[in-house]
Image 1 (cartoon, each protein chain N blue to C red):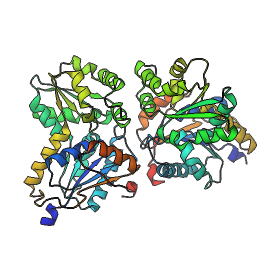
Image 2 (cartoon, rainbow over the protein chains, first blue to last red):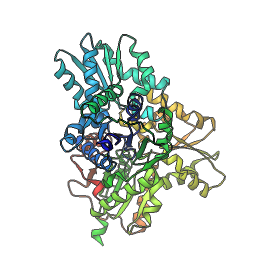
Image 3 (cartoon, one colour):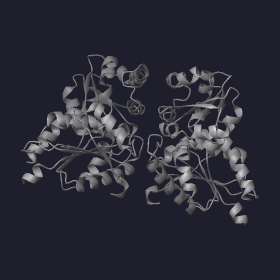
Image 4 (tube, rainbow over the protein chains, first blue to last red):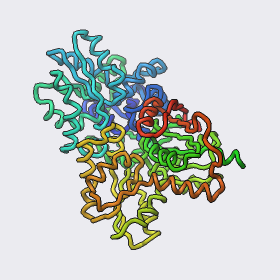
Length: 273
Length: 273
């Protein structure tokens, strides 16, 4: 039993965005080991179809299983929205996504019952945030908006930048006219633009970061399933990073946002899993 | 021999950008049939490594061979820059890319011997345009610039747009200070932004579109190899389109830029080739 408890959590994303989720797990569950996989060869997922995202998610889960993970976190809104329900049926370990925890907190947060959701085209098109929020409280109005350029802007490193601000202003224009009081950052890249979002939407709009909520949900899940690590993380490298392409670039990005010194990222041939 | 002459040309790209090359082939070689493949599941190529782009190109070429193509055009600057030399060795039919024709015309066009090249990070990082231009005339200075956000902006449909203009201005700032008189649009998406480029660089800078030059190069190649189609293209669908994901979206985009009514795009599992 102990060996299962000390097994790592598998965390995956289409690329670097999921590191904002890994960061919250590191902060909030410091005893847990992590195996992170970023599908950098096939990023972005946000413009792909449901079938393709399910196929890619299955391959990644097969890889993570070879790493003996005790639970899996889909640290990608698109894959959470389009693949979680499908792959969950096939798995014998717990798996959670980022959408449900984000939807739950947003539903609890809104006062005027008007919530905005921004994400990739695939996430917005899935309407999963709307569906989950309305199943909690059918009186809430949810307005979804695809913001396809925000991931590329983050990947380009234009974080505090007037062009990025103009792009965000344009995407949020409609949402702001809808008088939302809560905005879900429905893509794991977006927390890296948090200060610009705050500036544009103003203090009266609550920003919901599903990454943080997901770490809390993971904590409850591990406790409930008696899977929480009981020892301390003593080994030198409690966090292992794998990608499908361009490992060095990933390592640089990871080191710019994680509270941990990423030394090595390994590249694996994900298509073979 | 006739049946070989009437075989189609295989044209491939990471996604929709290569349609600007297909368009030039349709206009300039109206007797030729085309099988187009867009790797929409794995787009973009511009941020991927050389090894990955070679692997993907090999899979696509294996697929195109099943379509009995008589020649192949790599209608993608990134794949032309990183994979052409490698895959050429393995092929028994002619294959050309877009980089060499573009480099040749740019070298012939410049008067002040200062050429700018814009493209993806992978294309700029390969330095192939510089290498080819300098092998033609070592006195020419070539300045390369990665413009990673331009493909996403085109894919978002923000073609004549003030934000796109601001992004282009920022990317071109350094190049314009270098007093270039010739600018290579080194990504097949960029001809769709041609009017904005013209406005920003002014009339004294020549814009080189490798798509047009590639169609001319293909024409010479087919004549030289006695492979040019001699009949007329009589069948109802001389152009066939295949993608690895999201066929419907591709069809819409193709219809917006091609002088041809694209009815059906087929999705194929490219990873299995």
